[in-house]
Structure formats: structure tokens, C-alpha cells
Image (tube, rainbow, N blue to C red; front, side):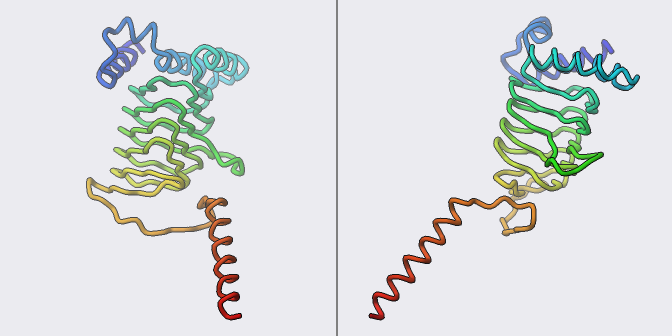
Length: 211
């Protein structure tokens, strides 16, 4: 346990140039406090003491602004930078050496049962405000841009941006964007309405010209 804590503190110092000492990280950084509380909550949860587990996790949420379900699986050296507004769901799984910024949600879509939250690989960076929703995997060494909304699997070594998220880089090479609209893609209702109005205006102008 102490070895894991030491590794996590070192990870914070390596990732955040503002971190000046191990004491500062341990006492003042909400992310590491949330991780320590989660380890305690998860210990109780795995022993079927679920009320105590939830009590610990909710106290941690109030203190840190970070909500981690006690059943979530978290690897080593997780860094939650700033942290406010981070939500990690019950069946989420996070690998080693992951960096998460503020406002990130690892959630479900509200329709699934059982495994309904994402699995995050090793050495993944998730930018501030990103949402990863559903029971799929984000592969090792991926980068998820700030405010991206990820709704389907991302292969390893990729960079994904946008709403819904699309892959713009794979294995270090730029990827040309190809429109891939399916049943889970998010459309823009304002843009759709503007297109409809444009078509109506064009039809009226064509009719006026014919008269």
C-alpha cells in the first residue's frame, strides 16, 4: 500500500510542475485524497459492507468534489489533476498511469445494466470536460481531447476530439475524417433547423422567380 502511495505521489510530481513536494501533494491535492478514500471504500465494498463503502465515497465527494463509485476498478499511479466535477461510475475500469483532468465523466448512457461504464487502458490522458459514455474500451496510450464526447471504442494509440468524438490521429499519423453517422451519433438540432430554413427560403425564391 505504501509503495503504491509513493508511486502515486511521484506521478503527481512528474505530471504537475506546480507540485513542489510529496508533503504538498499528499495534504493539498484533492485527486490523491479521492484516490486514497476510494481504496478504503473499495476494500469495504469487496467485503459486502456496501453502506460503509458508500458512506466513505460520499464523504470524499463532499471534501474533494470528485465522485468515484466504490466498486470502480482503478489501476496504479492514477493522477486526477484539479479534479472538481470528476465522476467515475460503478463498473468503470481504469488502467495504470492514467491522467484525468477536471470535469471528466466515465459514465453510462442510462440504458444498460451490468457492465455499463467504460474501460480505460494504460497511459491514457483524458482532457477537462470530456465525457466517455458506455461499456466499451479506450485503448492504451490514447489521448481524449477536452470536452470530447466518446460514444464508441477507441483503438490504442489514438487521439480523439469533438462531439461525438472522432479519431484524428492514429499511431502518430493524422487520420482524414470520414463522416460516420449511426444510431448513437449526436446531431445538432440548431444546424438541422438552419438547413431546413435555408431550403424553404430557396424554394420560395425559386417560386418567385418562376412567377
